[in-house]
Amino acid sequence: MQNFSIRYKFFFAITLVFISACAHLPHDKHDAPVLPEFMFKPTTQLASQVKQTLLAAKTENKKALFVLGAQWCHDSKGLAKNFSTPQMQTILQENYHVLFVDAGYLENGFNLVKQFNLPIYYGTPTVMIVEPSSKEIINRASMQKWLSADKVPLNEYETYFSDYAASTDKTEKVSATMQHHFNTINQFEQQQADRLKAAYKVIGPLLAAYMQSENKKASDEFSHKWGQVADIRFRLQDDIQTLIAQAKNNVNNGVTTPLDMPKYEVFDWE
Image (cartoon, rainbow, N blue to C red; front, side):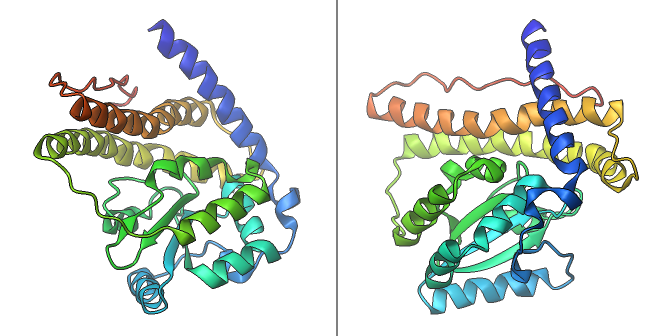
């Protein structure tokens, strides 16, 4: 319980930073010109847009790049601003077909990530580099980096997206033991994803009320619940990669002990 209290205080502080960042969106540094295609807009044509993006990428031997974000999100706007720079425009136009998708107030985007075998999105912006033929997310291990997109220097954007543009689709042979570990990890992640999806239904309306309020003052309820969800969102992605590394190490060394599955506290409303 003490560890949870410490983590909660930490994520409550993150919430305050989030509030501070979003409270003055009309006046922050992201007022710099952003290209229209990098705005997050509601649409009723998402399925056809995704299909067209994948087809165009496959036809031109490029990667498909899907960004799930929101106009209220500080880091989503930071990513859009950097994507609009001449340096990134060169990289993106030469190597990717890009589609920005509006997450709304955490009520949208689930069908999009599901198409690429991602059980949930862990925040905004979620940046998915997809191999159009296999529909595999090739940057899954490093996706969490972009949840703090506004803090990432432009030169890191250039290196990251240039490197992934040059990567090839490699299918590795997986042993029966390793596949068993993957199945265990996938089942664990799906269980937590179901919890998060239910949690988004709780915090989404509170987020909307906060962002649409005239004084941009977050309620205590929103801050408290946002902090709880943020705790698991941030930990889970790292824990999944740790489990995969542990599984590979076990297989390589002939270790047959079960994986050390992490445990998370229940939400107040569960």
